[in-house]
Image (tube, rainbow, N blue to C red; front, top):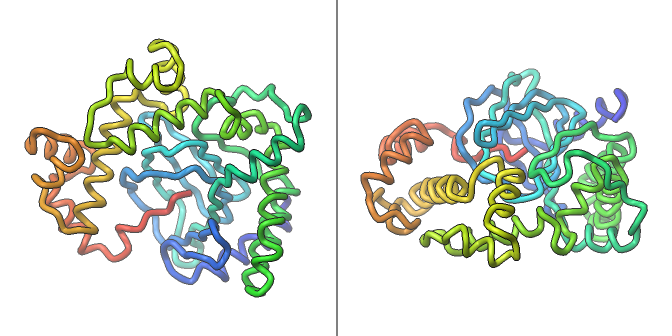
Length: 305
């Protein structure tokens, strides 16, 4: 994305992101983010998506690994990941601005079939859950045209799918094409780990042995453990614990559940163990954390790019 494109892209995100939080749009899968202040960050689940940054600076922590990105950069998340995002550079006059587009696996699959062998497979980032890269001019042009459709809502059903397809096409044709293709390639490492993650998510209140997860996705235990950590930056047990605690926090916020009931709901047998691990992750025990959250306007909504 060149300087002129970045300037136009920033102006569009700024204009359409009215609220200082998450801004839904009329384009399915597309959301815009605005933050007028730096954030300390809390653990949040990030869905598979591509985000393009228009202004500001953000750090993303996946376990103990730090990713940094700013204007003109894109971030690609290939699987569901527990992350901590910290906005490092944002003020009311110069806010953090970004767009997020959900990964459309159907579109990627179709493009992969059409482009076939022409996709690069040499990138060293292949098999990673998070990729940071420079937004190309062609990707930037597609993103700008997509945002401009928000001025013409009647055109969205007819034109948005083609522009989204174009953006994913240029992503597949980029140096990161190999990693992107693994999201949908049958039996790729990312696809197998994504299947294991789905198994963990749908059985959150159960402890599934690593051996069982490995067998489910057709990998040896050692290979599964190594690839799971390569993709997610954490072990399967660490991933499940993070997922349980984030789910617990959301339940207590949305359903006003007490800590003990929430602990059992997400698979903890001991409420005291749940409280200890919760405080270690979020900085406060459950009751105090939820009370503080409810006092902070907009704190519950987190920027997911």
